[in-house]
Length: 437
Image (cartoon, rainbow, N blue to C red; front, side, top):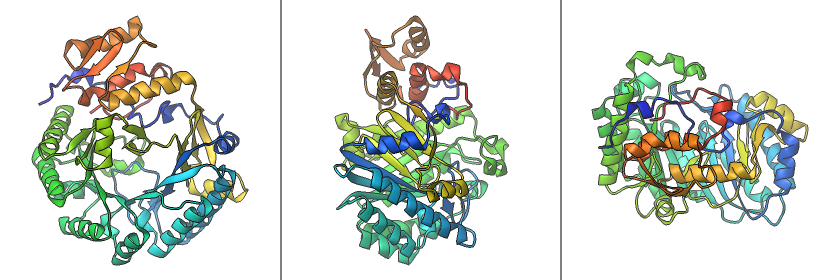
């Protein structure tokens, strides 16, 4: 069991899916910068396509999404998305290759299979892609037979299922009721369709969730044979996410219970043969994510830990984020305003942040820490940094040899807190982030 030091987890910190983080985004970086960054892209490129709609909304979710409604909103959104695809593909140099396409949301299967296939065909033609790796997030509550057939025909190899928990009482408390049988049916269909990497999104720290609930969910997940598991701590921020106000805050486990859940989750999954990837992902040894964790090529982007080697990720759709070597840019979040921007023939970026060489270096060190790798801190050693690291070193949560920081068996639950010590923006732009565990 990991040692528990609550005082070192008291500070709310970012999840560091980028550096600088979204807290540093400002409107001085927008469409013009985005267009030039796309023109300057080279080599391999990954696409992320955001579908900001769900058939029904879950109370815990912090994603930019809304309900489909009568379908008219979806129709004009898809029209705008196709316009953005045309604009971005026209800017992207022909020498680049799109090697990965990821669909997220929201729930991409809020679209009909016919609409999705049309979107996929649009992407493959516009970006001259031959055989990219395609991944998609699926809501198993609305995974129809037609969707199952389409995934097989489209040769989609990577799927992430939104499961969160199998405990009925906890499902009711977060507004996401889905019987085990429905998830089991989805898994069988996905395997028949040729999916080789199947991820389950799970959560701990949910309302009414006890240690037994989490243990049961993990056992059921292992039995279903998930190749990857993302075990996230629920971030309760109702002051930011209005739909979370429907969740009873008094029913949430305390920090000590959250820590115990994370620790037991780690023990249960690693004992079942999963490789720990970073601080909250797990993968079976054959999965590319586990291989990347083992050979030092693990990376981190807005989708979490990944094995994606592409230096450029281009986001398409409302709120999607693009990450280039020297700049990060986010599209307009509001679907209506997003539609207006792309209808004028412009890119949709409205906020972002430039990344200096110093940012890139610090970001790489932060990813090392989050990935449970050693990293050299020579460029930032100072009295302040050493003072910040001291309690982590004294308690054996990390080792410092010269200027090199090494992980220990107890680093993982403290990784975000340690990484935050390298983040100079936290002092100048204080923000309310999620709990560190």
